[in-house]
Figure 1 (cartoon, rainbow over the protein chains, first blue to last red):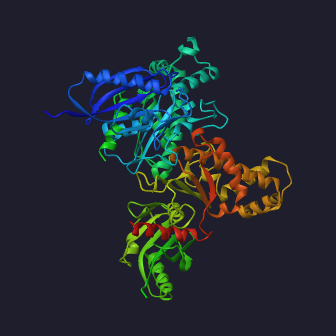
Figure 2 (figure 1 turned 90 degrees about the vertical axis):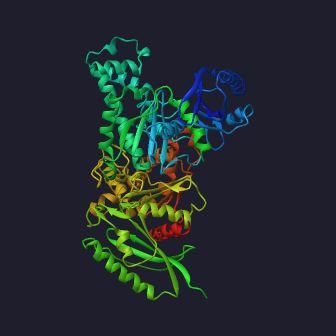
Length: 320
Length: 320
């Protein structure tokens, strides 16, 4: 029996780093996660990561490791570097692909986590065969990976496309990026919480949200209350959907997708977010695009899309 | 001596249609224009156009006509059709490329005028060798042609990208497209006039604009007054630049250009629009892009860019 071909997909987050071995069909053979411990130097982190990878690898059946794909924040795809990542204490520029190559003499590729999600959707998810689509990751922030005419958009600097930092209101909410009124301060898990709190101050409806410790309110709580008919929670989803729909209509005008996939924690709200967002987007679409763009949930299993996206990145390059 | 190779570039507008014979270096050998007479049926228009083309052609030195490129409003590039063009009375869908092919058995290609402007900039203008740039045409409306990673963006439906119909204010100005608050109702020659009139109603500064017949105020008049220091005219340019700069920053976040070229009538205002627009764009840019995007004037001669763009479209396809 010949050894099976697999790749390693690594997802680096500010808190946790997860990785998994993935075959060409998108099956995760083995996976685990570890603390990123973002105060470590990048070299020390990669040293630890290498050891964990090899620990897991010893338990695998005979295999050929064909390549390593990495999803991370603030990646410059052309350079293979992570630059000014606010949640990682690694300074201005880290040659992360280079650090990994010190341990592995096989193809290594790194891209932004939202770009990886888009490639994953194309290889393993609901965008198979599609030429024009977009993946929006709705978590703490809002990330975007955009495919036009069959190719992922990079642009001049090789970063991910940043729909999350387009401007909703120049005098609006403070964003962690330093600007005000960025889309991700409204349309994200944290944005939904901010919106719910604002509605509490503006309206007088009774709501269980009023009885909660503000700092502990999560998007999941707001979702649970919305499902029970809580008026404040429902209004928070509606306002979030409206702003998201408006900015998605702008993104359609610029990049022309046929489907926009939502992924990430907040997307698990499903129709309570998806349906009004689709309707608001439709309202704001230029006439030539009306009725031509669908909003859908990602086809990647929740919690698996980051590893699968990183694996898809390297599979897609090995396939060339 | 061998015959010279030339192409025909045609620009179809709601009022006038212009065309010219252009060599591979971008020299216009001969050109002319005629009334579009948009009440004519498309077949009759193409019949007249063909005759005018052949009239001009008899005056040319010996040549080989290699192809025909056409720029027009509301073109579906994939189908070669003009669809629902509001300024042309040609119904839902006209197979314009097909009508031209009835007279010419050579390659014919048609695209949106803003896309043609982008291809022209790449072949004959200031974007030679650039992989990531955008051309914004500022005339009656606002058109956009976007090149990312060396390729013009089409997207799902094959129309031009429509930055002009992204939303500035959902409760804002009525747009001719049916929506409210589209960018082109602010950032265009007509948008500038609307803004100047609004400022007149809001402020009390003396201005020559107050003495004019409102319906006759043009963007050129506002430009001339701004150059003389008229406060209302200057404020109109500043407000226009601010809205344009904000939406250009959004477009940068989605498509990553290194240069944005302005063309069309309003771009002739030059620094009085360009400088504040660059500054406002910079204010709204996500930190990863700050300082990396330049706003520049088109390198195509004013009034020639439409014909040159249409010619560049077919040259670029013949070059493949």
